[in-house]
Image (cartoon, rainbow, N blue to C red; front, side, top):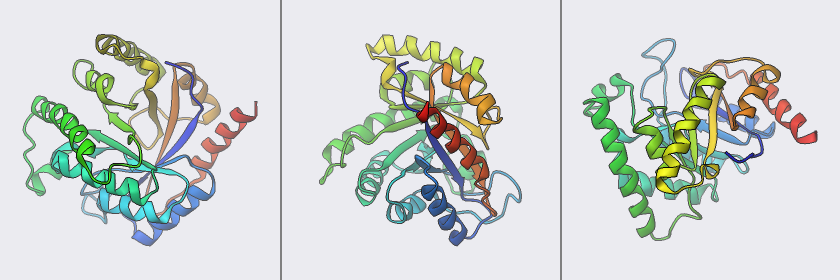
Length: 266
């Protein structure tokens, strides 16, 4: 993987909070210099009260496209099973225009059974969800090419997940960003497999940015000075801080931004 500048992202988890608090946290994050602001794609909280307050992913992204002016915005990640693939392409194209070309289209096969069941989607099997994702990625590209007006540019595609035989193969074929999970050793192992898949497609793995969670996700967490260098060494360049409501404490985000800025000065 080629060396890329470090970028810091915030996954602002839209649970347990009023929208006014979400909007204020987004504004603060952009003011302090975050590079990317993600939301997630669920219908119910994942932590705390499972029936607590919660807001929908793509409606939020459309609002953020107007409420922000510099940071990229995106989904970490959209669940493929919740929307027709061609409709999702049109939604992404529209939000891309509203934001002035700042959208990242994050997508994955989906995993949270309650979301599927309560909203009437077919949860099926992991294998079927992965097959549906593969089909959708092709259809998203075809619809993007047919839209008028087209997207402002090739919208970066982020694929989240770590399955070695299917997910990483889709990353090698379609993604501009891979969002993986685990410690540095785990990610390094997965990157080796991703390089093999890239070779199968004749693709330069350096074209794919490597992203992971450093707070608020399944990956290990720690102080930027301790965790950052080991992840940076294996090629991670997008470091995502996940923060939940109702009280959005952005101090961990400030620490990671300060670490990024220090690297840029050296």
